[in-house]
Image (cartoon, rainbow, N blue to C red; front, side, top):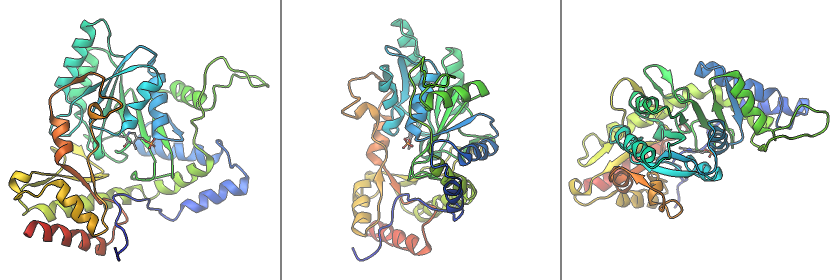
Length: 379
Ligand SMILES: *Cc1c(COP(=O)(O)O)cnc(C)c1O
């Protein structure tokens, strides 16, 4: 282990962040209020072409508030993509609602519209029309926007668009995060831009944005004393973290280009290696930020090399890689809930691997990754 660790996806500062943090110190707004918060919101609104973004202290908080804003309550049913990070699903339980997990389709690895409709029809038959659909743009690749919207509209069920991994991705020129009835982003440490911890909620009206801010700041009524008529949350971002966000927005486009270069690097690296495919968008309507570059390894075609063989070979060279998200319906904490679909998400999990994808990887890092992969598959 003589060499520095190569991480899957590590924070990459642009240089402008500390200026905004200094502004917060100079004005003594070391608080969940202040100019950085408003400016970070404006930066995101300009970028997304959407007027109603509220920044929060995590993506998970944004999903929780999103469910609340969509009216999800105790006893309700919420449909959720199974192949995702647990934070897509946990807030359903925070609300005392019941998740139903849905399989993926093979083109985008996201919500399968057929399994989704089957789950909706079955729930309605049982007298429980689902209250919301949580759709995820996994690893930055947009879900089947038109097909999922068509199913949602057919049954009048709102979409909570989990765009945590997809800042900078788009579908037919429109930015991810703006397709859902509510959209969310995460700025956690591993995401394409980070505020060390943070998130955002994208709404479609000033009224809903204001309500998101009201609920995220303890739901305080207009009164000189502290008066509350509703339960609130402490979900607003700090003015310090929002300062990091402002600096990161200045380099977002660079980060997208650099992550897409990493994806192109892997496409080139694996083009002559039998039995390995690099996950890529299905057609030119889709634009992915390629937050993480991911591959599928088919041991039947690689002389028995599996994704685990590759993961261990990389680990031995001090290079981090990781299996895909383990589907929620296979998780100990969620496995008692209903699931619709077949074994697509499970098969993806069994064969898939996320490779180092950061915007801060060097030519030397790429050489080290390449030599491990070339040596392993040449055997
Ligand atoms: C990162 C992530 C979240 C959670 O965001 P946090 O900011 O870490 O709370 C939610 N959903 C998905 C798909 C994610 O990747």
